[in-house]
Image (cartoon, rainbow, N blue to C red; front, side):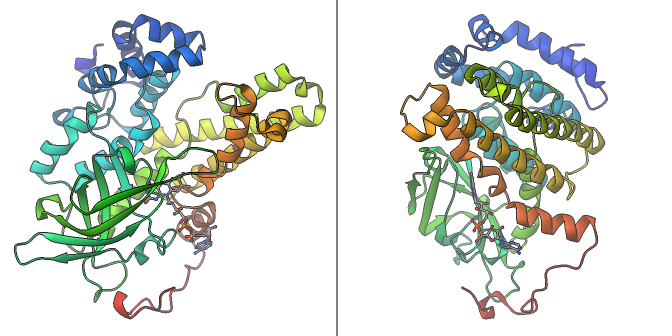
Length: 411
Ligand SMILES: Cc1cc2nc3c(=O)[nH]c(=O)nc-3n(C[C@H](O)[C@H](O)[C@H](O)COP(=O)(O)OP(=O)(O)OC[C@H]3O[C@@H](n4cnc5c(N)ncnc54)[C@H](O)[C@@H]3O)c2cc1C
């Protein structure tokens, strides 16, 4: 089996073997050795120096975007095979970095589902090769969980182009992005979920102002994005005008699935935690051991549920059941963050600034551990989805459902 033969019918065990064989042949030897020996700092240095070339090689092979059709640079395999490939890449630190998540996991699938021929031709290849980076411009100060309440405006000009004005917030990686997935209200006389149009915004357009925000974990991954009368050509509209909510559902489903846990069963978060507990002596405390073991069991259950979900999903679009995994994943990250902080108390107490040190990593893990319970839809919203769509509980009532957006009370 070579990668030329990989397709939707290839058994998973052969997909894994093909990925391993390809990586053995193409991943630079020092990169591979640093990953297998667990030399994190060396791996980071090697990756930084070789990233651009490596992501081109990965993109050309199809392993960066395996579910995409062959003509757009993938193999057309299902989510289960993609999970197997992701696992092989993760083991060697060879997958695309976190900042490419909005492009690879969100923009690609949405453009494949909704793009016209010219858009697929223009955007997919550079994305697969790691040459262009994307961000997601959905959330606004008044529209997060209730995303359809967005009020960024897109007005159509006589020549067919759009003029967009408004403010977005929490836009991860917008400061290093070439393009943004943008939702804007094109018709406030329509009801809330209608009258929204979806655009592929060139972030270098005049009037796009990106202001980074510093987070409590000391990273500056988020941004506010101000759109000041930005002219967007109609060729950058994705899907029909006014049907942007349907396009966004494709993005949101892909996002939830992408944030719901590592697709392989193997060493992961809690193994690192156990190793730190042994190194610090915290392991001798039976109460700590008990919590670590509970987290270990929860992680294994999540991994196996994720593998099962990916196998059952095959080529089907991810659905509401992804909310269960996202909820479980967020709870696990929080618990791991709490335990990490408790077994490295000196880092927290002293607020040490030793960026490569274990105590500093524990502090950052603790401060970052809430991320998954907010990003991509909060845990409360996932519970609502599970209640309404999987358990058939009554839906949230909206007393203003019939009103045009312009007449809805806001605040
Ligand atoms: C790490 C990270 C990265 C992010 N990246 C991006 C990005 O790249 N692009 C982007 O567009 N956005 C991004 N976001 C924003 C994220 O999608 C929103 O923060 C999220 O949807 C919540 O919206 P909000 O912050 O406006 O909170 P709100 O919607 O104001 O919610 C506040 C609280 O009320 C609860 N709540 C609200 N409505 C209900 C309800 N109906 N039932 C029960 N409880 C409810 C919420 O659960 C929450 O606890 C990111 C967020 C994080 C944390």
